Length: 154
Image (cartoon, rainbow, N blue to C red; front, side, top):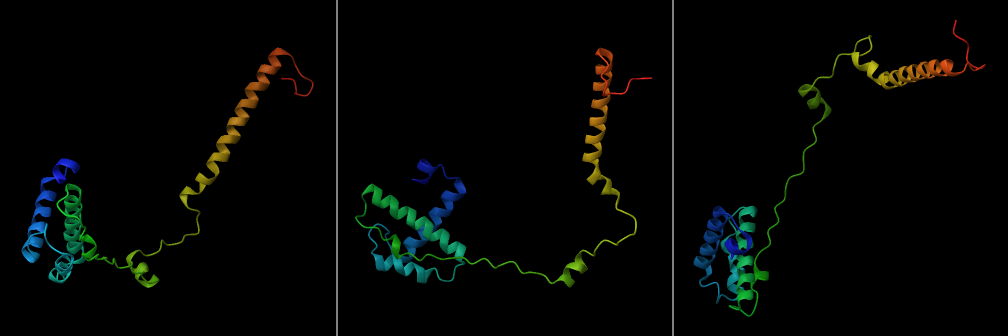
């Protein structure tokens, strides 16, 4: 089912096979198991980590869906399976003293930082471009016809 429909990898197929074999060892034949037997898997797998329990339950849920689709069973026992929820810890906030130890602040100096001119660079480039354009435009206009507004070249 997994290999044909979903193109699962060999490791995934092996892990699902182990999970289904383990469930079958715990409760017997999966096709004929009743809801109480499927629910008892939660107790049998209680010592597992939440992520491992979730993987095993996922494999069994998918197999139950397959059994329903193929007509092997008339009911779906998968709602009786546990639904583990793994809780990830929230990130801890570090106090400022710890942060200062890890990354001390930069020393302050009286001179301006070397990148300060970067703030003025776009304005300087615009001013230089406008000056260049206005000079070229003025020269072209003077060649064509002198305007009384513009001063004559000397």
